[in-house]
Length: 326
Image (cartoon, rainbow, N blue to C red; front, top):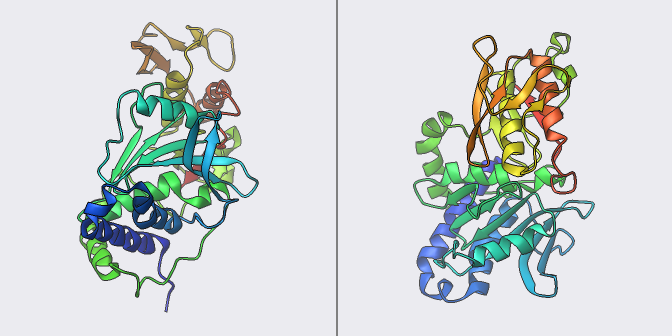
């Protein structure tokens, strides 16, 4: 009999969290510690984070002798992967000013991502995002558990930080398992048509030699950027576009026009359209339209993507850019 998949186990855990929130709403809406125990800890454990291991999940980390951060999630070598801040069930996650202060304290630790959650709603912030708005939001709802599980695996799976594959718990006896699996069946066709990531993909560090047909890797399907986000790809040009978009949203002191990797005649980023002889992509930089030259071979698209990503601060972005192929 095959072992249950990590995805099915996570969906079952999320179903139980929804059940706990419904049954104990009165208490959880007044008690942050209870929310953490009943709603947040189970999600983290289902994603591979051992909340009882303080080397993996450090609780109540004090920053600048002022702010205590609820969960600091670490890789095997101690590198900080993510920070999670807990709120009572139903408490606002986007209070103006308060969120900004939390983001500042959290990103002083240089994690890949920061989350604020009340157990049912998860707001994810990226260090490269300049505004106090989440880059991703996840809502745990009984009719949307499978998409939510896919998002959580993409953003917060412990395996991303190097803890390796985890053994999924037996879900047959897990609370809410039958309900969760029935939801998964109903939603499987719907989710297959979304942009949710493939769970079993092998990443290769981003390098120009990946474009070599002799390697027989085929067409790139997924790009993982240094901020930890994963993007579905249609063409090699998408690699350059996604890399440029991250850099434009992260760096506010770029010199425009910006030459390409060759550094000679071709302009990679410009305020002006380069003309019909070269294809380009419109992006946004500092509130203005900017043009990215995309008239490159597969090899040069990757080379220029790496050229742009090298402009990101190394300590702030700890994830290695990589490609997965179909």
